[in-house]
Image (cartoon, rainbow, N blue to C red; front, side):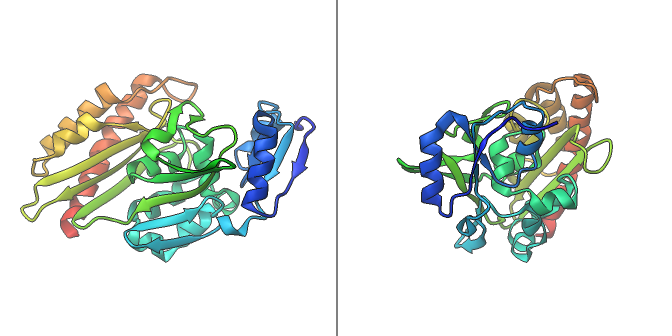
Length: 291
């Protein structure tokens, strides 16, 4: 398995990278960590004429807090995020989920921006960005724009990015007060793509009544799937097994759209969505009470 011939370009600045991408457009691909793109190229499912390598761009490798948001450069390695104390303190959902991504060797090379731009609905980082209500900074020679994570993913492996745009920064809000976050997924083996995964957060008031909630699923449709109606069933309610079960039923029956494959039927994935939803909501409510 060898890739088709291509021209390799390694720009030394974002401006140079944007110029190269603008010049070659549809015939070019951006190389970040290469953990998704290189296998696709080796199978010749992608045959770019130009490969634009961003690994010389140190200005895209950072993690910092500014006020009530965290900012990550698109070339920040997944392992860096996994190990960062700032993430553990201010983004507990992200901290909990990072070890589920493939294996340490993959996370050592894989980048946050690369995984998001790849837009695999079975990937953890796209659904986590949606769950955390993140925003993405997209740059081109024409300027800069911001797109919410919820609007970024449009279809299977499809995004809002134009052919001449590069994802350069990911922004997520820091953890909210009196809020519990939880993540889980089910895979045949650790490191395999999950059959289904769920991220949830809930916010409680002083009387432990739910004020806000979010449920997002991976590998349950062509994009990260938000169960907005199920989350709405939680708002105004005191946590209970019955309330959690009602939300899990709603999400698994009406708001996920899994396809069957060689690993599991669509019906089994819906079953997993229900079981995992109950698990993450119970955990999220307990953590919200502790916070």
